[in-house]
Length: 462
Image 1: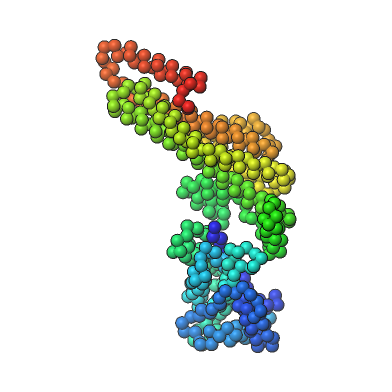
Image 2: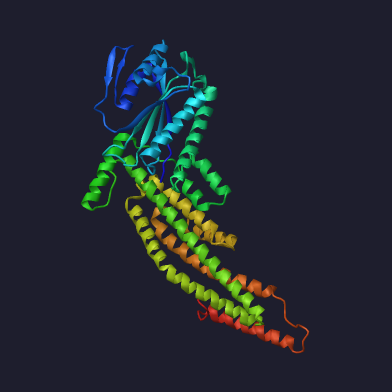
């Protein structure tokens, strides 16, 4: 899926950096720095897909000359700790083609130029041959002063002052997300990015009733691996793929990230199982309601209509069982993955997401499968109390099995209760007719007999 990244950095002399060296490296060009009397030659560097300069309409002609532009930026600053350039580091959607990536980077540069009246020098980089092949990104270096017909003039203080810098960067982060999503939509991709924090995204998901997304976002940010650890883990992952063995991270941080991702994937699959159970209950209840209403309209009494409704629900259950064979395989896969997490050791697993698994299972239990959720939640809380404290990842597999069985049993009971409620609300027919009272009693006795038979396992599969 598309990944969001925008980072703003400063090129500062006090850190031993210069704008001329920075732009020479990012564009893989030869730049002579007049202030330092040095030549920065990176023409042998590979991986630069494109580079270009975007400047205000009234900018001087020399602003399109990379060497002239950044020598002017260096010459304009006189302090030993001056910031001579600002870098905007962007992740480009790998779903786009080369033209789409270039246009997106160009649009962001135009946005910076229009808002701050600076010059923007863009370099688009391809993924490293040994790295993640989705890692298309761009480096946008901007001047720290406005560029007018007279040259570089006033400082862009809104990006320097503490009172305004945070708000400006937040605004540009939001604009970058909007621009990426528009580009992805135009290209026909469903993937989207979000610049907000995980907490803000989860809150929004809960407000719109998207429980599955909220569950997936209820997590801590991933540990940052860094370039060295990432390279080590990528090489090991490729080696495991070539040798046909399971990938086992080599570093501690790599193990934490790998197992945290496995835990999130597992919770997502549990959410899909829960949603499938909910859908099955809805379909069976709908089939029972429609059959009962149709039978009553055709003149059937309440007992006959109720039995027909039960048969319809049972038939729907049979269809669900046929469709659910794939879900049984999926459930076995979930259990196998839980077992593998458990085998890796409780201490390491706990540090890499065991708590999130426990919390996710608790949320799934609390929500139930539809109507009667309060009763479902109370029953599962009582089961958790009986388990007692201290149960972590060791008993997760057994608890998952019990949760799925309880969900299925409660689904059956929920349909019976809703059907009985519907029967109770139905109006008696010709209550004043002679002998009606006796017939009504016979109907009730037949219905009770049918319920007892179903309780003994001879009903309609409910």
